[in-house]
Image 1 (cartoon, rainbow, N blue to C red):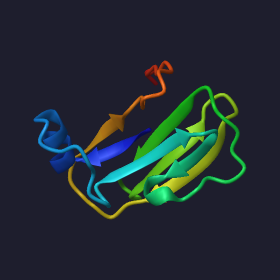
Image 2 (image 1 turned 180 degrees about the horizontal axis):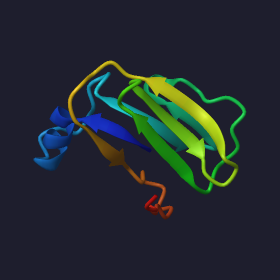
Image 3 (image 1 turned 45 degrees about the vertical axis):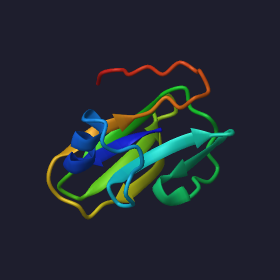
Length: 104
C-alpha cells in the first residue's frame, strides 16, 4: 500500500500512538490478491499488476495520481480536501514480498 497521509497521522505513526487510520486522513493505493483498490475500497478497473507504481501529488489541484511507470499510463486519481502538509506513506504488507522505493 502506498500513498500520502496528513501530518496528524504521520506524527501518530512516528510515536506509535495509532495503529488504524481514520477515514479521510489517508489516500492510498493497495495491491492485494491480484487487484488494486483505492482508499475506502474502491476498485481500480482493468489494471494488470505493475512492477513499478508512480505517485504524483498535485497540491494546487488537490489531486493524487497513481500510474504505471513502465507502461506510462494512469491507474487512477483521487481528489482530496484536506490541507496542510502531506507526507509519503507506504506499507509493504505481510506477504513477505520485496518493496523498493525509486527516486525521480
